[in-house]
Image 1: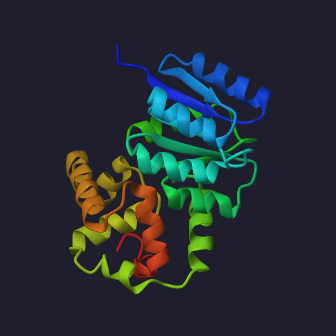
Image 2: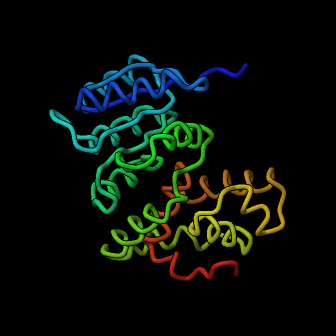
Length: 224
C-alpha cells in the first residue's frame, strides 16, 4: 500500500476548516497532517509538519494566503499549494499562482474535486484543466507589460519543445499530450523536465504564466 499524502488545511473559518479536515481524513489516500487558522500559522506548520500538499484559503487574518503561499513555495519547494477561493475571477488567485501555487479550487465547487486535486498536484501536475483557471491566467497576464527578458527564455526551444509548450498552455494532461503529439508518456515527462529547467519554472502553472506574460502564448497555434 502506498504512503498516504500528508495534507495541511489553512482556513480561518472553523466550520470550513473542520469540514475539509473530515473530508481528508475520510479519504484512504490522504492523511490530515495539521491545520492552521491564518497565513502565519500555515508557514509555521509547514516548517514543523512538512506536509506534501497545503489547502490554502486566499483570504485570512494576520497574514493572507497569498503571502503565505509565496513564503511556503520559497522555503519548501517540494510542498504543493492549492488555493481555495470563493471567487472564480480574482486577482489574488493569479498572484497566488504566480507565487508558486499549483492551482486553485472554488469553495462552492464540488467537494469531491478536492481529494482528486490533492492527488493531481502531488503527482506533479497543475490544476489547469478547468477553463476558469486558464481564463484567470490569460486575463491578468494580458494586463501586464510584455517582458522582453521573459520572452527571450523561449528562444532556445526546439520545434518539438514548442509543441509541448503549446499543449500545456491548452491545458492538456500528460496522457493527452502523448496522444496529441504521438509520443510515449515517458518522453512527455522528459520534455516537461527539460522545459522546466530551460525556462526556470517549477511546474506547469508557472510555465503557462510565463508564456502569457511574455507574449509567447500568442505565437502558439493549437496543435500546430
